[in-house]
Length: 275
Image 1 (cartoon, rainbow, N blue to C red):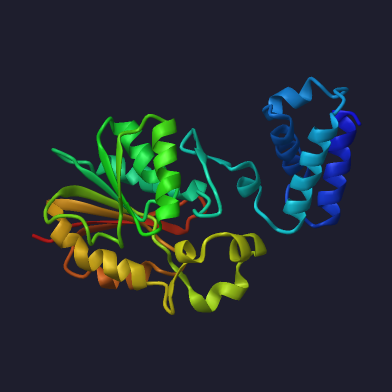
Image 2 (tube, rainbow, N blue to C red):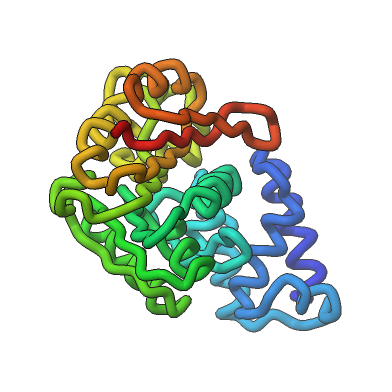
C-alpha cells in the first residue's frame, strides 16, 4: 500500500468515526508510524509501506477511534515552540497555558526564584527555566508525572529541580519570588460533560479539584504567603467560571490582574503577596 492510499483510507476511517480534523490526524499518525515528520509525507506519496509500518499505523488509527488522544499515541505535544514528551500520567499541555508563561515573564522581579506547583509534564517549569536561564523548582504529587517532567527537563537541557510532594508542603518559607501553576480546576459534577478524550484518558488527579473546582486554588493560595518573598507573585491559570471564586480567595492580596486568552475568556490570574 502506498503512503497516499494509506492517508486516504485513514482519513476516511477517522471521518466515519467522527474524529475531529481527520486528515491532519491521519497525517500525524502515519508520520509517527513511519518515524518521519509530516513534511516528509508530502514528497513521498508513492512510498510503499512495509508490513510493520502498516500494522503500527492501523493500531494508531484504532486507538484514536476508541477516543485515545493523538498526543498519547505519539507521546508528543508542542508547547511554547518546544516539543514535550507526554504520557497518560500527565495532562496534555494546552496552548492556552502559554499565557501563564507570558504573564510570569513579566513578573519575575529582582533575584527571581521560580516555583511551578503541580508540574505535570513540566511544561511551565521547563519553559520558564529555558526562557530565563534560571534554575526553576517544581512540585508534583504524582511520582509518575514527576518522572515525565524530569525526562523533559533532561531532553531540553533545562535546569529544573523536581520535588515530589503535595502542592507546596515541602517548600521552605520565603524561598521563592514567583509561583506559577496550572492546577486542577474542573468540578467533579462536570465530569460527564467533558469530551470523551479528556474524561476517559487524561489523569483525573490533574483534572478534578473537588466539588467546586476551587479546592486546589484554595490550598495554593493559603500557603503561598509562607513560601513567597515579600512582594512575590502568584500566577495561575483560571478554569472556566473560576474567576470570581479565585478572586475571593485572593482577598488581601495586591495588584490582582486577570488576563484573557485569545477567545476573550479569563485565563490567567496574577496577584502580589500582601505585605
